[in-house]
Amino acid sequence: MTDTFDVVIAGGAAMGSSLAYHLAREPGLRVLVVEKDLTYARAATSLSLSGVRQQFSQPLNIRVGLAGVAFLKTAAQTLAVDGEAADVPLTENGYLYLASEAGAEVLRANHETQIAHGAQVALLTPEETQARFPFLDLSGVALASLGLAGEGWFDAYALMQAFRRKARSLGVTYVQDELVEVEREGARVTGVRLASGRRVACGAFVNTAGASGAARIAQGLGAPIPVEARKRCVFVFEAKKLSERFPLLIDPSGVYVRPEGRHYLVGGPAPEPDPDSQDFEVDWPQFEETLWPALAARIPAFEELRLVRAWAGHYDLNTFDHNAIVGRLPGYENTYLAAGFSGHGVQQSPAIGRGLAELILHGGYRTLDLSDFAYERIAAQRPLLERNVI
Ligand SMILES: Cc1cc2nc3c(=O)[nH]c(=O)nc-3n(C[C@H](O)[C@H](O)[C@H](O)COP(=O)(O)OP(=O)(O)OC[C@H]3O[C@@H](n4cnc5c(N)ncnc54)[C@H](O)[C@@H]3O)c2cc1C
Image (cartoon, rainbow, N blue to C red; front, top):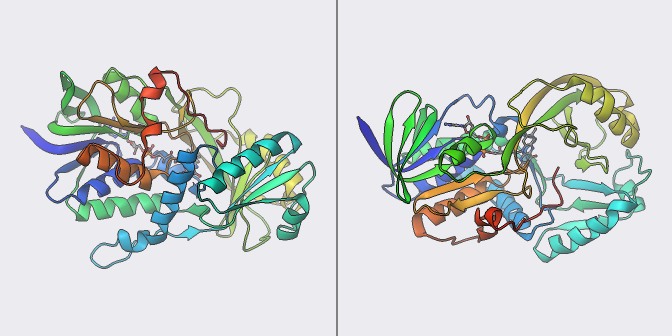
């Protein structure tokens, strides 16, 4: 038997569930989310550091970041179900980027762009930075940039579950199954086949299958994407509490750290080599050899710490220009994509889900124009380079 849905979404984590929620606000629309693992144990969304920022170099990423934080601030009510508020806590301690002399010019240029697009960020001299964050050793730092509002971190898993709960309350169907094949007729996807053998006919199809699935589905559609799964490890450690206002700190070495309750989370720059892989093994030596020395040099109090645990997840890295690829697939009338978020996808999920829903329902973006993220730039070899990738 073949079921029919107006929209079928492959991948039901942050991006797929945000889209499902935004579509479900349209009365009567039948939406199916196909998710291969409803525990989400290996979804990037569950393994994310959950930062939200406007300190990007691309205007569109700044605007999407602003929309993301605006959504988070009202998510409790917007995503409430049966009068019960959604629990999506947000900590607005800001990102603090530290730059050496070599990086100061880029920080200044990015700052101009960020201010021009409405971000509340301040450039700080080393002296001003020291006064705000006395626990830092600022050796080698020439300039800093601090988010004053609208930046920090949230709980990505909680946001995804809140989207999902709200979407289901509005009639969206979720099924645990794996999309294995997409059926086409000319310029239309007409249906999908699932690992269980089920066939579902659809009016529109969206690929939000992340690092573990989006590239393979895109290949099957004859529209390959330069997106690879790149392993990133996060380590959790216990150390002295240093400040209520401890920010998400980005060291010039690429090492980043933020507090999480009574612990801290730390990660680092891309390892060398950095292969496309689905391996979830933690790279334990990375902590001892790279992260801890950089941390202790920047924050002497972290010479004493206790490693608690660690995990590995995957960026869906767009190797072409480190930016999202979002929109309708060229050559198709009813097929869409949101992938390649390169380490900043959970904060983008509110604005991307909303935009894609507008594109599917109305044929164009209504609130925020996401056209710069369109697939066409890849074939045209026009990169939308993001200089602030963590
Ligand atoms: C260590 C780490 C730190 C990060 N830090 C941040 C951060 O601070 N801020 C930020 O904004 N972002 C961060 N990110 C990136 C962010 O987590 C991702 O960009 C975002 O979660 C992508 O969401 P998604 O829904 O597109 O993909 P995913 O969360 O990967 O979800 C894709 C889903 O598709 C499903 N799927 C795959 N193939 C199929 C198929 N064939 N059929 C059915 N289902 C399928 C998968 O099971 C999965 O649930 C981080 C990522 C990692 C790994």
